[in-house]
Length: 601
Image (cartoon, rainbow, N blue to C red; front, side, top):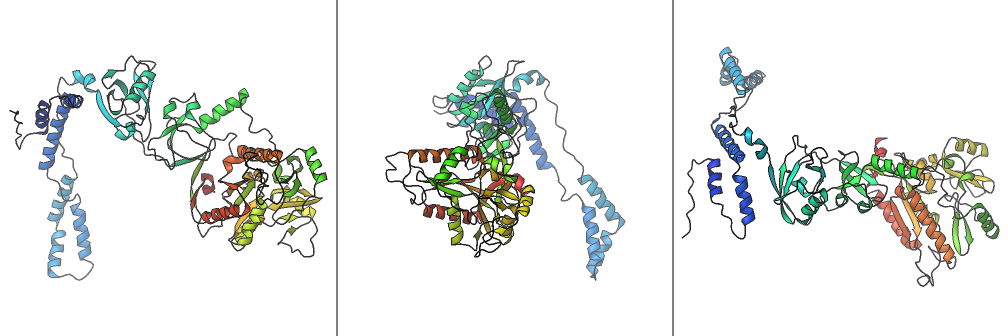
């Protein structure tokens, strides 16, 4: 015969209900752990006290009269003023007389005084024996449900007391979502196992091995951490990061791996050394640890001091220099030079060993703005760049499109083809030159024809994004030429040396940088019939050509890849042109991540 369940009366209090519920908990074979847990929780004296207080407060709420409003006198004055604004009926005159009578005004004033006072009851004092059990009752039992995900918290050993302390709560993790575990809490038990004398790595293993539900016994911190709202700080990563290779991270499993170019939402910067962040677009709700900007720069500086990292301020070889001065002289003596055309400044191309190569002036031969230091960006070390979403508006000038390319990319041909297809939407910046004008040429169409004195003055004033000399004539593309194209509401497309990006990356131009590199065959067998990228009209490629193309692409990527918004792999001219056309159309339609500094200028 089954035992009858106790019957609760209508007037039974919540604490009586809990007491009856506790008496009915009987451990069985299937749910013994759950029943024991519930019985321990419901049997705590502090919970009983809280329930009694809760019952008193609910009783007060049911019996407590509440005023309809707290400013009856003010409302009466407003109504009286409204009545006097126009003709009144006899009823309205009577109402006005009542509202303005001294007696009613006094009654309403007293009403407001009473209504605005606080008549809440004073809670009874705690029991005399409650203080004796304060230490024991302050222990908090927390039960979390997690799947195969980590708990989302790190621990440390307090050097002074030896206690195991919660050091960090990962935003979005199981511990954070519960709201029951806080930084500074002391961990006493995990699933009934004491952790007082265990090492932190043993405790971490115990936590990671727990699947499904996990029960923690915690002594709450004296001052619990406030749950902060997630920040809206977004960073573009300028380097690759692998937590498992970082010995400095406080917890490798809690680290967030990322690649250069990833957009990270930094949810907290409370720790000056380790930020918590999420990858934008990642489905994982839990944040991970990443080195802070200050910490990453500090250790990069240390590596440079120890000689394990190159100095970012040291001179670098130009990424587009295919060979040294002596080899350039040999190539020039054997090959026919092609004169620069409009929009092809410094892109004098040579044919050698079957590969069409683009040689630009070496750095020491360049002048003016192109002879500045090679480092790019405000910081000496590449860590993070704060970014924000930006979408072009019709009232703004179009964004500048900048093409940089490795050997064999033939970016000038790609640029000219896209512009020729739609000259009403796209254009090049007309370059300046000191050479004489030919009969068929018009000033401001093919070139801006200027004197050498004027050209030198403009170069001295840093008017050019890059410039140089070819066959004793000066050529250069000016900042004003770009502005002139944008003033016509056309998208300006330029192809420049990677070094020129420093001058162009401003809030005025908001450049979108595209790195064009040719598809390079992987092996001799696969390229048995291959020709040079982009058309195949220049003969077969040698192993030396392919190696030089690879090195050129790698060098540009290493030095300037962090400034690139899109990499375009050029299979052939037609497909590359179609892909570039699609990018230009999306620039006018979609939103993109841009440096936050651009939006503050």
